[in-house]
Amino acid sequence: MPEPIALEAHLRAARDAGRKLLIPYLTGGLGRDWVDVVHACVAAGADAVEVGIPFSDPVMDGSTIQQASERALEQGTTLDSVLDDLRSAPIGVPVVAMTYVNLVFHKGYARFAQEAVAAGVSGIILPDLPLEELGEWEPHAQAAGLETVQLASPLTPDDRLAVLCERSQGYVYGVNLLGVTGERASVTETAVVLAKRLKATTDKPVVMGFGISTPEQAADLAAHADGIIIGSALMRLRLDGATPEAVGAYLAEIRAALDAS
Image (cartoon, rainbow, N blue to C red; front, side, top):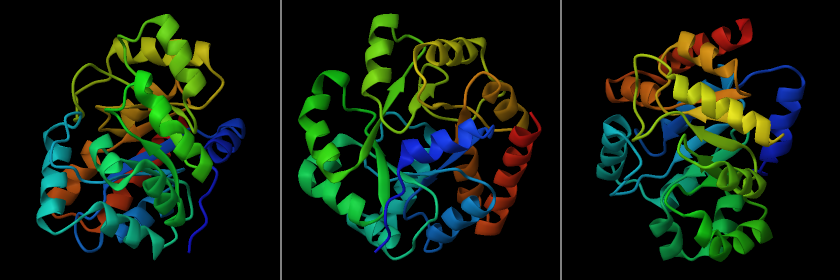
């Protein structure tokens, strides 16, 4: 049974050593070899991995990740099957599960938190669980040792931003743009402003996601934050039939750009 790696401590240590953080998002259960994709990303230099647990109504996700989730569900993927796969294959870096609160609520908050940690999961992102309702979930997560990551958007006012940063565990997830996930042609000034606001508000790792699809974009945005999250570009490769090795090679290009920045 894999032991979870402390998420925030792991990322802080890497950041404080001068490393820009790289966190890929991968849809759990997308292909029988999906865990091989996770391992390929770790070998390419990922500091943590977000594993999406497919949900039938992923309101925050753009078309690419929606397609990835739909395909995974068609292949029989469930919350339990993703946790089972993780339990049987230690990853080597912190794993952050990302899903929607309906799945977690249905299983039961306490039971989900315990089973996730038993599968080696270190953190959780529940994008549709608002700050005002965090109190229903948080005690169960903390009791199990599961770190709950909070998201901040460009529209988050300063007072709420401070509370989000205070409540967030592991890292603070900065949402680069308004709307859903997906690849974009460029990193917006809005994302840079949010990164700077977050860095001025918290000492926790600040990692920016949504819309990053090239090494150049990754390096540009990471210059203003502690690192980046990349998901849709990787899932597009998988939907187009890329092997785990090909996904790892692409992520290695992102890693090289971050290291050179």
